[in-house]
Length: 275
Figure 1 (cartoon, rainbow, N blue to C red):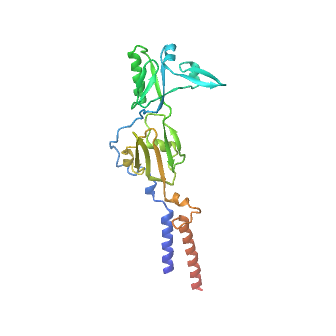
Figure 2: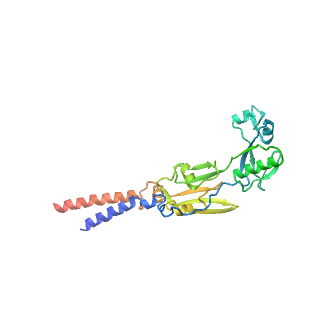
Figure 3: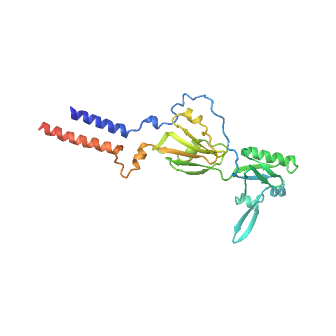
């Protein structure tokens, strides 16, 4: 009887350790509860000092187009070659020169001079330049296109493809970022995803639970900003795999080996008693 109890307890422990609880794996377990719930307003990417943006102005006049766009300068065989953004050659080769936002949140735009763009979205910057061109009588039919150039976020930890990724649209969520990074691995903690953010010189740390839709969509870091770092913490299984051979007292293989040994010993004892 003692041997049987020992076998049952050993197998129970091995099973408990080797099996992952579904509650720790499944995303959005409270989806039914949050159906129809109001969420935080969408947070669009806005420009900050030291950000770099490209601004391309197109008008019906080729001369005006060349006037408002920065030339792109390259080095070719030791010689400076200048190509105008408004020209066909520059566009076809994908040459784009950018504006770096200074510490005061401004850029120096041709003809118009200094323009404050800090805190603006891409559409707002484009509309500001278009309105100013029209107000000064420079161009009434201008089409202004603004793109991000050096904005990015990083995804680290237990994801399939950790790395640094560019921001190419106005709205990026944590789910967007994790999707680009190939989703969490089976070893990532779904309930402990952390976003590190530098907000006006102050470091912030936001933790969210992917198993809870309510926790996720109400997090201040659900909508990412440029420079955010997403970290997915490894679970206990991954931590145990980081040992030399994985056979410490907490490992799954240890308990399976122990259960196998106990079974072998009990069979030997039972066979001996039956003879």
